[in-house]
Length: 554
Image (cartoon, rainbow, N blue to C red; front, top):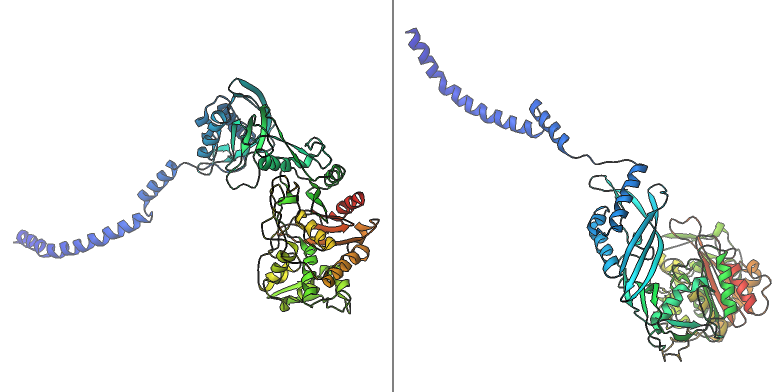
């Protein structure tokens, strides 16, 4: 009985236990599953630790000298041996490296390469390159210096070479290629206005201009192409293709320019004293470019720069205000400490103000608020039209003979429109553009600047839609003359005699401690403009460069 009772009792309770057990299993199963999913329990902790141990660690921290030496040696050794895939794998962009290194042998035809590393400087490693360029039966030695930088690869932190085209050759940029073959265009022999040859040995900063002359006139000037190693620029690049090595000389054609040898030599000497400086000198009555020089050799800022011109733009703005009856040279004009327009509060340098002064006084001292205060009376496109119609700027139609940027004065509104009145906002110019502005004031009409006479190739020069009235022109000359004698340009223009006029400018640039200094002026039939980037006020930086050339030219 007892035994049967116990069995019976178990049978009676089993359904409840099973039912409860079934519920409990589901609940516990869900609980265990959830707990394991979030890493709970000793077993889960063991699995997580094991997974962590299996995951490769990414190396971090500064590169050691040994890592830099090893990574650079791996890359240079593979490149020297012609193992392109292996060399490319030693960089942080194997695909791009493989493409350019393959072209180095196949398209540039460079062989027998010897790469010699120099002394590392931190993560940077300079190295020298020697090789032979061969085309058909012609061979010539090639030698140049380059450099690489070692970085940690993002995926694993291993040291590799940071890939960029300049590693292969310092003149290469993204999208450029090295090619050896018949020159794309025949060489040209560029002459100054007196018939002397223009070379970079004589005039160090003319390299980009000579390249551009060749690109435009090589085929037109009657020359015959030679064989060369050159940089073929990427599509859309503003830079001309560059010859690195001539294997056989072509027969050059001849192109005569308007450059004056004495002024060009003086311009070269002036910019050599001021880093990041550029200058242009024009003949005001014709637009002939007499000199153009840049301290930086790689880019022709004088012709192709795109920089805010600061207060030199007030020459254009003044012509607009006078024409619209919003200003007159000798009449009272407001110059408060501040003026707010479009939500921006504008001020003058050092927050000065001129009480009871004339517009001429405001122009000479470069009072910003004297111009900003007239913004409410102007349409959004007023300055744009004035620049285009009277000064020939911003239409992208100049035919100088080489590549140029022709200025830009976009239509803007509110605060940005007001900023454009003082050469900030969206306004962009270069020394060629601003020299042309002074030339227009001096001659009374816009003459498009040119480096090669239009008679050489029959091209049409740009023309302005209209000229200023005689009264506007007279007042504008008075403003610039007064500024040269008594205003912000007086110190630089001291000793520059004759019929002169000038305007200074300082253009603020984001993340730049000092402004770009601008200066534009004329003397007699010469007009000139210059810029010194990140150097300070124009009267103290660009002013002496421009004044020295005007003295010489006069």
